[in-house]
Image (cartoon, rainbow over all chains, first blue to last red; front, side, top):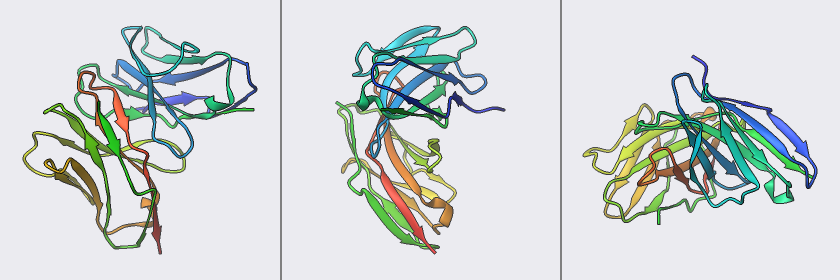
Length: 113
Length: 115
């Protein structure tokens, strides 16, 4: 049973560019949440997708957008990259009606130069 | 607002000894869930243990136990018989009151286990 997978593992971009990160949830999970983890900090909630719609959003600008596909996989897009967007981006999957833990992927390390 | 505080940026423990990682939380909701995750250098967050606010007993999972003191709003993680593989970042998290799949994380504690 495959867990949560993310691609790519690492990514280097320059300021002003756009980036797309991908996530495949754990088999059977229907909800995907994205978190940003800056160096030395805990993860911060970006947004969550369920039934192909953004259901809730954290305190992140509109430069951060996403998508969920019919197979529950998800993409995170960041436009007009800033140096401060450098972070580990974590994808977490869960069941919409779940009450316990989320399963996290290994993350994508984004470096903006 | 829900908030998690971890005041120990780094901790050292001798192999085979027990260690306690501190976590305090703030919420006005009577029903809540608390989690601990381990994050090795590889980056993946690994679920360790869960404590519900109405659980009568402290949660335990193998070498991990949670010292839950509701009145003090603390949920400390106790790792018994530390192993070298326990060296990692540890995060305390709380579930959002309305969205069970949205978590608030603390800033983490870096645990180093010495041989």
